Length: 261
Image (cartoon, rainbow, N blue to C red; front, side):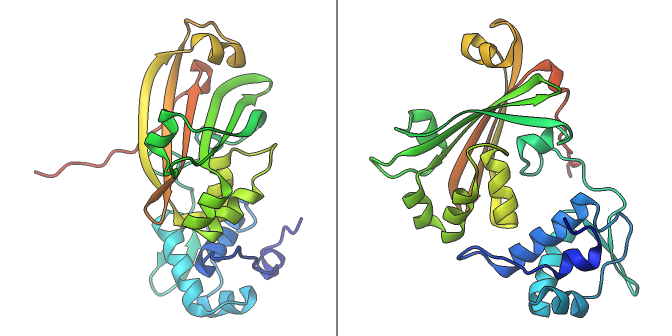
């Protein structure tokens, strides 16, 4: 793996069909920042230099940098340049985040239980755009830390032909998702970047019930926090993820803004 900023940035930019270049550049820089290859507090190369090394136009670079600044990954110091933020934004529910990010990412194992096509239930069609008679993909996984289950994640999308009708990049991103490994919502976030936008987010206090309890290694009467997340592409809801968190998962943060009178 390339670990120097120069070598990392010089790798070819690969895009999916229909994926805007700004998203690919955003994803490359975001990965460099999150992995520490572009260290916190370090100055970024100028727009013209980034354009040359990445092999894209200066306009594409500028658009990607604007998105990174909006997301709190970089800061601009007028007259000096753009810098990697000293501290990345803490993952919270105010932004679209994968379940892995909400749990802090480190030392997490994703254990897939099911990944198959099925007839969509009313729950799915309430949250995801699925054509009449269409099928949906279902993926169920348990997230563990040091062998201890923290969350059960159930994810639903339309089948691939329907996703392709919404966006070629979306269909390609779905094909890249692996039967094992990261959650679907994480795969889509990493592939589509800011083109995948948050939809409805609902928090509900509940009890585990027998099925969830058996996967999470807890009692059916134990409390869980249910988080339902949806995400959209081009205004169309394309995925819903319903996650049940055990008390061991800790807390989920929400940054609230002040109100004006």
